[in-house]
Image (cartoon, rainbow, N blue to C red; front, side):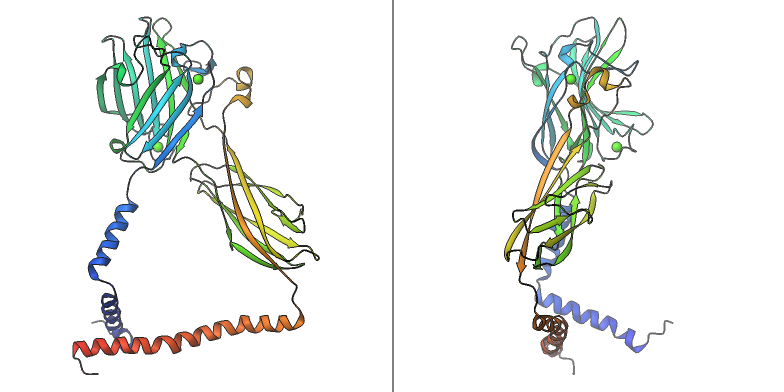
Length: 411
Ligand SMILES: [Ca+2]
Ligand SMILES: [Ca+2]
């Protein structure tokens, strides 16, 4: 037998009273509804996002035999740019090409494919080299037709075909002779278990029969939902007295999985406020570099100092963050890019954001103010505690009495 001491034995009764009080206030069905809708929203699939664009250099295939960059390729597989967006259900992409799409590739070609690799869990350690799915439109040289294939890739390179169907080229490209330089690709995200955060790399590729070398034009990898930086400060407004210094915390967050270096700067329109991220280098426009770890959040102190003769009143501080996410690539060409493409040509993803902070500058404290401030600090918790005791006990008592009255139990 469990020996319940009197103080523990009363706990179930108190819980019951609390529950009855709660049900008395809130309709029971309402509670169930709140829980149900919260769960549905929390587990609801892939993000929707508006159109995004990336640019891809010209003549940039990778020779998959040598892993070197090559300019020698079929230009109808050379990706110029990508437009992509999602409505949650499907990921829709247009692969814009430097040359018109060829509905019937030359018989000299063994393969011509356009596709996307999807890292559906944002995890480079799952799937094959991080890739969990392939969605591809490929030319079938025997049947002289195009097929759309969806594959699931395992960690060790196993392939399960989820879908494979022949489709007319007019379903994804412009009619022959109209000069359309694009291929449309769609991925049914429900079939890929509705990824909430994923990475995609697009490609065009071909293989000639004579040399059998697969040459692929990969775009850089994109993150979905699109990467964003956000800034928050704690507290989000500051009161400062003339000549005083205060330090606040600036939090920068981004999607998990990337480790961007973020350049932070802060400025004020008044030149008697000094802002300092580095805490040892006071200047009017301080800048600081912050590396965001893979879990996506980093903080840095920002010290705010007022000049002795600063003008009092409200002032707005601006905090700016920008980052150039390095282009993440699925396969990096072995030959140095500098021989072939200056690194400046390689596209980077520039992201900017800003935040404002209200600073209220006041006159310095007089000795009398110091005493007043001391009592206002010490006094506040005292009156708060008394407030709770004085205010809530009659309320609980009345509720408890009503309940007991309804249950007709003797008091
Ligand atoms: Ca290209
Ligand atoms: Ca993965």
